[in-house]
Every structure is written in C-alpha cells, then in structure tokens.
Length: 227
Image (cartoon, rainbow, N blue to C red; front, side, top):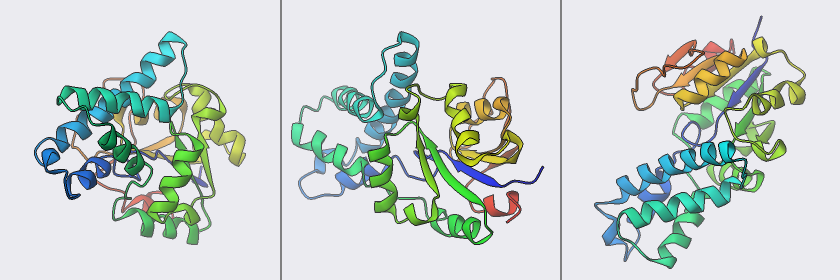
C-alpha cells in the first residue's frame, strides 16, 4: 500500500528539546547554567514524559503545558536552583524550540510530492502552533493533531486513531516518524509503517511493535515515503 500521509512526533523528532536549556545557558547572567544545562534538559524531558504516563495511569489528566512546567520544577530542584525568573524564561523558550537542521527541507520535499503532512503530539495546540511557527515549519504542515483532542497521552491507541479520522487513510498508508523508541513501537503495533529517528543511538525497545526503519536523522524520510 503506497504511503499517502507522513505523520511526525514533534518534541525530539522535529524540534530539539534541548534547545531551551542550551539557549538560556548562553544568555548573559546565566553563567550558573554553563555546566548543568545538559542535565537540566535531560531531566526535564525524562520527567515530562514520565508524568504523562503516570497521569494517564492515575486518570488525572493535565495538559502538556502543565506537565512541562511540573517537570521543569523537578529538574531545577534537582540542581538546587530556585529562580522564578529562570523558570519563566525556560518555559518561554520551550515555545520557541529550534527545528533540527534537516527538518525544513525534508518537509518541503514531502509537500512538493503531494503527500499529507502533520504533527501528532502530546503538546497542546497552542504550544505546537507557537513552536512550529517559531521554527519556520508551520507552512509545510497540513495540520497539527494534539492529544488534547482526545484527552489522553500517547501511546494510547485513541491518539493514533486521530490520524485516520483526519486524513481518511488506512494505517498502512501512514509513515509515522518519531524519535521516541516507545512511540515508534506503539505506532508500529497499531499498524503504521514506522521510521524511528534514533538520534541517541539507543537499543530498540523490548515492546510489542518494532520500527520498520531506524534512522540517525530525518533526511531520508522523503525517499522512504516514495516522494
């Protein structure tokens, strides 16, 4: 079945989640972050994902902006940092994350080939709209699908169901792209053709569903989609 629709995770896949902490550390007066920003970025992301899963299990949903703030609070506390101004700045920067260098030209190639393109993300619509506009890639996306439309986080099947409803396509027509191994596994088990952007060179997750393609970046996505 030919690919008609390319669906992307946002954070860590199209957008560099380390960019906020890295950018803050480079600002004047933030010298304290010079040595610890990588650890803040790592813990921020880890807790952000962990809190989505825990809230799902607890049946206590909060949107991704709230979860992102809670995760940042933990990451800053782990470094002994109590600085409301820095927290506010980091949250602001999270709405302006940089896209990875290959993302914009890759999306343009998909659109030139007539393929559907969209984001499917845990992020809120407002977060995703702001970040994609800031990164200069919003115009190459047909839509942004947020879990807030169904009120539950990935990897619930209800999230992946949104793709077929939006684009009237079968799972076999979808090339799903994520940098998260767990997301790649779940999307594959759902029935999507999956490309795992394994930027960190991690092992394949020991979960149901395996990625069909394992990549170091997104440069070859158009070729995999038949563009």
